[in-house]
Length: 283
Image (cartoon, rainbow, N blue to C red):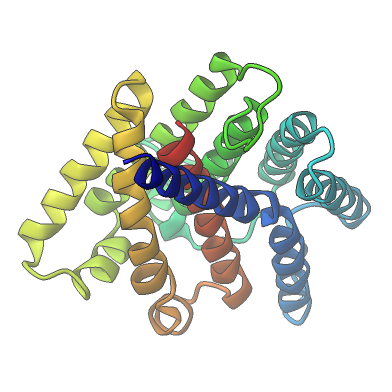
């Protein structure tokens, strides 16, 4: 019996460490894919999301935080720094007006609220500078993952008590991400088609998945059954990464999502998976 408990404890520690590796190394992939995305856009003479001088500073801070987190030096502080860096970079990209995503990625504004200088009929075609569901929801989840890491969760040999407030805040961010996933299943034709290509049962299975995302979001937002919800999500996310995000023929060739933008999204979901594994094993 004792040997069985010892084996289980070692397996959980191994999984926790693996989740930490995926999350702490995410900024490296974020910078790599971001640079290649900028190169892809340069061929089309399109500006990056952030002006170039600030882009280098942003990537330098991301690499610095990732390096210290990877070596376990002041991991909590640099995880908090990584969350702050990602939040500032996302805000700067959004207000800068250089974000290049298709209109179908955007949350539509209410009808009858035309963009400045435009007509009401143009609103339905162009949308507004509203948050992009597929892009920003995953960024929010990654920020939540860093907050969970900054709370002390996932540490194999914890010397300080974990911060429950930081962990709860990170869980709320993951819940917001799941709400956006459920929203996309109902209101995004592109996401619906991507799932329907792989779901047995068609529309019924899609609605069941919508309900499941809603229940998981409720668990993360409320703070109840978080570990169970994380375990369920840890099973769902690899399937979504492989079958949905990994379907480059659909997203890149058919839906015209930039190749390295889609690779960036895949990396974000891998980082989210790392945060979920931490909660599932050390929540």
